[in-house]
Each structure stands twice: as C-alpha cells, then as structure tokens.
Amino acid sequence: MYPRISDYALIGDEQTAALVGRDGSVDWLCLPRFDSGACFARLLGDEDNGHWRIAPKGVDGPCTRRAYRRDTLVLDTEWDTPDGRVRVTDLMPQRDRAPDLVRVVEGLEGRVTMHSTLRLRFDYGSIVPWMRRSRDHRVAVAGPDSVWLRSEPAVRTWGEDFGTHSEFTVGKGEKVAFVLTWHPSHEPRPPLVDPHEALRSSVRGWRGWVARCRYDGPHRDAVVRSLITLKALTYAPTGGIVAAPTTSLPEEIGGVRNWDYRYSWLRDSTLTLEALITAGYRREAEEWRNWLLRAVAGDPADLQIMYGLAGERRLPEMELPWLSGFADSAPVRIGNDAVNQLQLDVYGEVMDSLALARSAGLSTKPHMWSIQRSLLDWLRDQWRQPDEGLWEVRGGRKHFVHSKVMVWVAADRAVRALEEHKELDGDLDGWRAMRDEVHREVCEKGFDAERNTFTQYYGSSELDAALLLIPRVGFLPPDDPRVLGTVEAIREELGHHGFLRRYSSDGTTVDGLPGEEGTFLACSFWLADALHGAGRRKEAQELFERLVGVANDVGLLSEEYDPVDDRLLGNFPQAFSHIGLVNTALALFGGQEAG
Image (cartoon, rainbow, N blue to C red):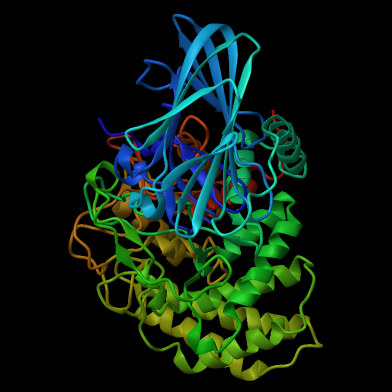
C-alpha cells in the first residue's frame, strides 16, 4: 500500500525542509539546502533510499493523531498503545549553516517502548555513508557530507542492515531527545544545539511571527497555516521562496508529469508580494523583492522564468533511475529544463511586482527603475514572437493570450510609473503606443467573438485558466461582457467536480505530454477571485470553502487535486496554492472580523 501525498507534514528551518509521515517516518530531507541532494529519499523510492522512523515498538501503521502546535511549524505525532500513550515532537530550529532535525519523544501515559530506525543515504538515496562513533555521537560521512546523530546516553543504539537502530522506554513525563545535524565533512563538528531549548525557542519564535498577521477574518487558521508554509519555503539567506520543497511528486499517479519545484519562479512574484504585504509581512516582502532584483539583473534577453535559491541560472535537468518514484510514478527528475524556455509573461510579472512594491512604499533601490526600463526596451522589440507560456508547455511555442496580456501589463505599469512619479524618465509616448497595440491585438486575435471568450492562444478554440487573471491585472474590468463570457466558458469546459483544470489535457493540447493531471488549486482560487469580482460573492465563497476543505489534516495543500479519488497530487506543499488561499481570503473577507 503506497502512502498518499496528504499523509505528510512539513517541518523546516528556512534553509531546507523535511516531510514527516503519519507513521512517524521522515521520508524526505535535503541537506543543507532545499535544492541539495536528499539524505532521506524514501518518498520517491523505498526504505533503503533513506528515512528515519521513530514509533512505538511493533507498531507498523499510522499514528493515532497529529497536529502542529498552534501558530507554529512544530509537529506533534501521538500514538495510543495498549501500554500507554506517547508523543514524538519534530522540528527544525533555525541557525546558520548547520541544519538540525530535532525529535523529542515524551511519555504521556503508562510506559511505552519506542524504536528508532535511521537509514542515511546521501545523493538522493544512492550513497551509503560510512558510520562511526565519536564519543556520544554516531557520525555518517560520504564525500562532502557529514551528519552527526546525538541521543540521550541511556538510549541503546546499534548498527544493523546498514541502519542505525535505537530502543528505549518512556514513562509519563519522561523525555528522550535526538538531534541530527549536517555539516561539511571537512569542517569540525558545529556547536551542539540543546533540543529542549530549541523546542521552546521555536514555539516562541513562530508565535511571535504569527502575531504580526493582520488578517482576522473567517478561516484565519487556514490563512495563518498558509503564511507559515510560505515562511517555511523561504530560503532565509537570500529571501528566495521555493515553489515546493520536493521534486517529482506526480501530477498523475503512475504518470510522467513529475518535475523539480525546488526553485524560485518569477510567475509567483506579484501574487507572493501581494499576499505578504496585505497580510502584514513587509519585511519578508522586501526580502523577496530584493531577491527578485538580484535574480533578474543583467541582459534583459537573458531573463529566465525561474532561478535557484540564490539566483543561480543553470538548473540542468536529469533523471535518477535508481528511484522508482512516488507510487511508481517515474521518472524522478532533478533540475528543470523549463529554465531555458521563453515565457514573455515573466516580463510583466517583474514589472507588476516592482510596481506593487513601489506603490506599497517598500524601500526604493537606485537601480530598480533602470532595470525596469531595460526590460521594457527589450520587450518592445520582442513581444510579437511566440513563447512557451505560463504553463511551460513542451509541445512548441504559440502566441499565448496570457503571455500577451502580461506584455500589456509590463507596458501599462511603465506608463503608470511615469505618470505618477515625475522624477522617473522614459519613453512615455512609445510605451503608451506599445500598450495600446498589444491591447488591440489581444482583443482581435485572442478573442472568439462567436463563443464570447478569450482563448488559450491566437487562432485556438482551447481555453486556459490563466485567462481568469485578465481582470485581476487590469486588462479589462471584471464586469466586461468579454470577461464574464470567459469566466463562464472556463468554468463550464475546464470545470471538474467543482474545481478547475489549467487547460484541457486530453492529448489534443499543446503541452506535448501524455496522460492527464488533476485540477489545479491555484486556478480554482483564481476562479473564486473572478466570481467575486463579477459580484457573485456567494458562489466565490462556496468555492473557497471547498478549496479550504481540500487541505490535509494539518492544513497543507499540494499543487493539484483529484476530486474523484479525493487525492492531493503534485509537489507538496505548494507555495502557489497557499498564495492563492491567502489572496482569495484577503479579497473575500479582508474587511471582516472573525465570528
């Protein structure tokens, strides 16, 4: 029996993250960064690809209950057994250059014997490290990686079957802590972390951070959990935000739509900034804006759709044949060849993000406007060519309507900047002319008058959920008949059991891939926004309620959802989905108080 993606919970330290299953097993962890090789890769293979399980001895199944501690990323997993009740608390405290995984076992009732099985496998489960003792530690070394395991002295520990095993008994009120710490193998052991103090300080730190949240409307718990997740997906040293901490979780069980999402996408930039600024997290918004400026600096012709955590540009894609994939969904990929695609929409995303940052009063940077001018000057000469579009299709370039709309956004934000900020300079007349030309062309070539809907690309009869963003970006007002017609057509043709697909994936579309995928959660949030903008508030709220209900038991969302099998699909947890939840909640309920 394969696990479900929803079986996992997230812990992290804003450098990397781990996924913890209902059975008490840490099945995914990349060290020391989100995009490093995994030392626990059972998520995409089997036990021999690395994992760390702590659970009552003889118990093979899931826990009795689990939950995050209120307003934190600290996870409590509990078991009720014939001998008593026990809790395992998992967290990753924040400190520089030495990621720690802390696991604290606490007896709640009776006396329970616990068993720990640790199998470290570096390089995505392919390398068995050399294990040795060093006083009160077990040390695993392979090449550049070193991991130190520390536990209580009274814990009996031994090696067996290329794993490290521990066994101990806890009574009511007794605690046993484990700390797993990574550091470069050529350096001395880093300072030790006190696991119990780390737990206390992590709880205080997260609750202090959540206290800054300005939202106090309905579903506040879901909004807060989404904001915590976005914070956890932030790479603190640079301010970059990964789309997800995982790679190759399938969009179709058994299919090939398996991609690496451990990078930062420009497509997320405006929506991320909006969520952070509106919810009260200006410092995080400014750090993301600053990451964006560093990443896009350079020749506008070299602008990429995604970058590494520090702005790295080379993200070569390859397959890992020794991993069978989640639920046998192969291939497992690392890196992402979509980095080489042309997506004209990202120019609009960057311009829109920087316009939002300026209007929100974030600190200005002296080079920000010069970067924007360079992007516009390049785009003015290049916007008429086809591209791969927002969804990174691998079936050839088209004149995607959403891409052209975002070209219009880029020109519009430049024009507005000159009109509102007289100290800025630029080609106001030329940019106005460009904006008007793009608008005319989209309305002529990207609109099907007979069906009263915009289409996926020029001359197409297909639809695209990204068209729901037309009113959001200001291309047309939400009550324009063409917008209303587009919303209805998308809802009817791309709707699936109350949710929304990105586009048709029946084999006749442009994505160039076999198979299908689930409904796309971010697009379903966009539909709620479009309905709200059209004055259909009740329908928007009902859809939002359904979307919140898709989250797993600890409030996490993946990229997609299969409403037939009630199954989360795609990389997990997905920033784009949680950004959608926050922004839609703020749009629907931002002015209301909880009741």
